[in-house]
Length: 405
Image 1 (cartoon, rainbow, N blue to C red):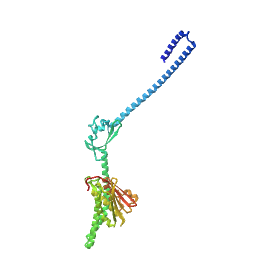
Image 2: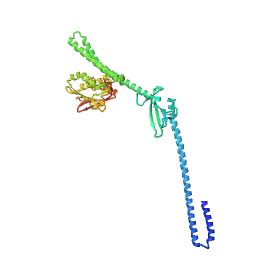
Image 3: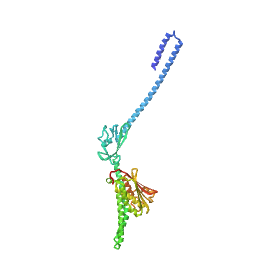
Image 4: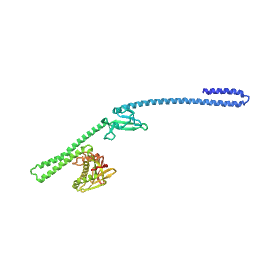
């Protein structure tokens, strides 16, 4: 502002001198008017400059406030980064930071403890440190086969990625212990149920055997009692076999084979003929496209026999027992259908549970065994009752194989 005022004074002095020179040659009124206009413009310029100075001062204050706020935020961000860095170092999970080229940028203390050979700047290859286990998504550390990990990649768009390594060894051990406890509990319930189921046929067999010792027993009576003893002993053998089949844990990998279903159905029909004839049941087999499934042949045959025996048990005398089979959407579907009344609706959800039965002489293991065999083959089983009657439907995944049985 001082420069403009000085400029004004200089102009005013120059104009005064010019007035003295031109006073005789120019109109004094016009010159005075021009000087007044110049003074007015100069005053406006000074006012505008003063207003500009005020605005600059206000902006300087706002800029200082913004600057202070940015400094405060920067300090807060640094403190947060320090806390996060400390947390990453002490957390039990491992974190590896990779750049766009897949090289290690940084890692926390957990990773350094597990993989001491990994250094910043090295390329990261999962296979250098881990190999896959039999469980999906779980890896085994090469230096310690007992240590299991899950590895999750978290990509950062345009800025590399993070790897999260979690040691799940203890969790796996807890799962194993829980499974063992569950198996022991199941075996305890099985032993109690088996003892109850064995007691009746065993007592009956002993009674029949005692009658065989009678001296006055005629030959036909001796033959009849002997037949009843054999029948009761066979019932006991069935109970024991059901128990042994049920307690088997998981599929037998060494016995897995590619099974051609057409041969199984032919054998199945021969096996159940006696049960069908005993109740004068009609047999109807409807099979479509043949296929192969992966599993244990004897287990699958036993499961299907179990279902058909169950159908024969509940089907009315003289009715039809049906078996429908064929390929549907990558699965081999088998339906066993009888015209029985089915189970009450309120217990439908329990029919595959071990030891659940609606029969007085049943073990409650038949359908549980069928379900286990089907699930071992990566399939599924379902029950429903509709206008066709009682329907058990099995779905087994079809496999491609160059060798079928």
